[in-house]
Length: 295
Image 1 (cartoon, rainbow, N blue to C red):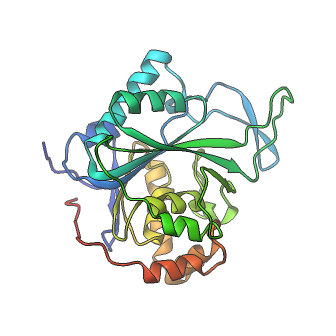
Image 2: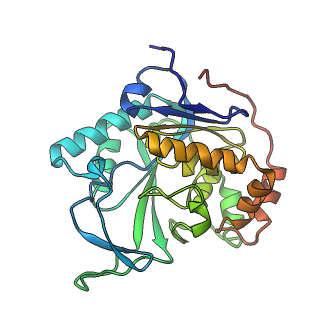
Image 3: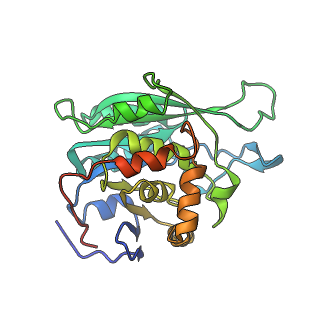
């Protein structure tokens, strides 16, 4: 079923669209399919614990949306949004889902139940993790990102040569040493679970071609969308919180300044030098077809 959906924001270049609402409900209301999905769903780790941020003791609580509702309800939630996303992947499209041990095993189980094919489980090893305050456990310094395609029979795109090139000429492994979010990425505010642009840029370049459409069903501050636009891709983000949608809008408007746009491209880590990304994007071939989102 296709119904009219009113965007919260749509950029003048039509490459960045935001919609307010529940991702499961909204995805059931239109038919457009995406070349890639990145999802940063609730980790279910808001358990009244403490952590360290910028040298200060802070609560780990992110909001009620991040609290566990118990084993069965958490699994049901992951099943439902992953099912909705599967219906919106192109036949050769792929999905990436981030998590920690709190949620990633449930996600993997639901992916298998829905007959996705898991391709990799990336370990993101943070180069600047916060210390463990209790001194009773190893420092939590990693997150996991599952990469999966729509089914066992489908195909998928992998930019093998580029990943090899930015890895010094050798095959890129499934352990990525990348820093957490940098101060300059917080110019429009900070989401409590904001991911670094370097991480999302690598994911997008690894699995999409130029002008690809990318969906983020839990957009937050839309790091996925900013990375997509910096890499000449298009983006649709869904989120329930108007505060974070406004932050996302500000971030998009910020990079419409050509000077900031170019500066951010050069600041992205994970490349051999500041100009490697720009050189690749200038040489990247055009995609075979152009598709437009109706809203």
